[in-house]
Image 1 (cartoon, rainbow, N blue to C red):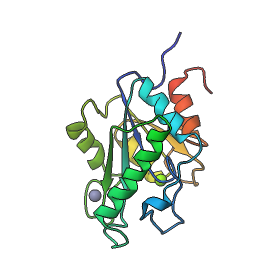
Image 2: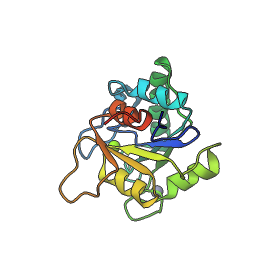
Image 3: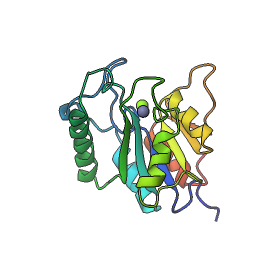
Length: 184
Ligand SMILES: [Mg+2]
Ligand SMILES: [Zn+2]
């Protein structure tokens, strides 16, 4: 028997919008709990990661805070709702880390490494080495590739985008690929 592509004890870093929950339309932000809708299969996929066991850490760019579209309190309420919906389906998260900054103003906005490094410092058991990054944006792939993570891009890549380790239609398929060595 061969081992899973993500080893027990490793950390799965997940993007939030478009990966776990439905994205807001282009250029908009999820600013209230009522807008949080889980994507199909997302909770079950996260629960499968937890059973590995993996740490599951969300790393999310939330520039809407810098733009004044929402406050830190709004974001906290959105994240609380996300957790509530996940927990209702038997899944949980070790942490949700966010970057509230404008582009070019910090080292934590993906593709920067700041949120990943913060996870290593602040989330018990979380580590970059041997981990994976799953997300629907080119920024997720870029961030993960720079740190040597296994990267899974959800949905389509555009021409010229950096290549992820693997491409998958959704979080469920991404997690199956990470956990099942027989998965294509
Ligand atoms: Mg996204
Ligand atoms: Zn930042």
